[in-house]
Length: 265
Image (cartoon, rainbow, N blue to C red; front, side, top):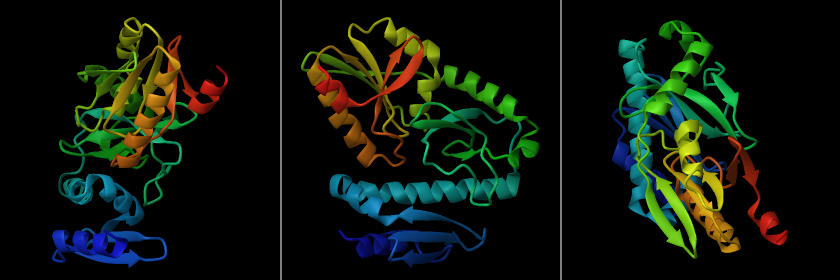
């Protein structure tokens, strides 16, 4: 399916009653504007096309879900404002992610690794809203209080793991689909507990928002498998973060470059 066909599918399924569409053929980007709210979001159609090759109709369903949840959050904000008792969670994003909202308000954020940055979000049930500086007064919280609340919240999240073994290496997958799977990389107690069970080198990967992979790498093949795995998840993820993995040692995360690591052995 090509870009124009994807655009037609999205427009057909979302309809024209609530939304207005502008397709930029040069940038291969679709702008969806909510008529009543006067706000919109941009969809990279090239990204949807590549995901469609792997995921078929699911790729389009994911776009529709993102659009509906985003505008639902905007409608909730307009009608009800923000609950000062709402849960705050940390959100992991790549360092290329925007530092400010569309309206130009800087997000509350802090550095994490060379590949990742931590943002903060108000949980809205099925979705969330990233916290920017303008929202602090509405929430009656300071930036530091936001960060402390998020640090506490992430520790309360469950950590169900699925185990898989490939060529003598063990991989653990966390994929609860609550929007905060990658965020669990900030739970040091969880990482330290896993570290105590790892026999080889411990790696941590957050290729996209809805998966966290912990590797127990016991031989060179393990790094190749990890590289293929993270690249696959990075490619098909709704919100990609980084295809690079990290070594976890002495409570620190260091990016590993798989090819360089293998060449040095």
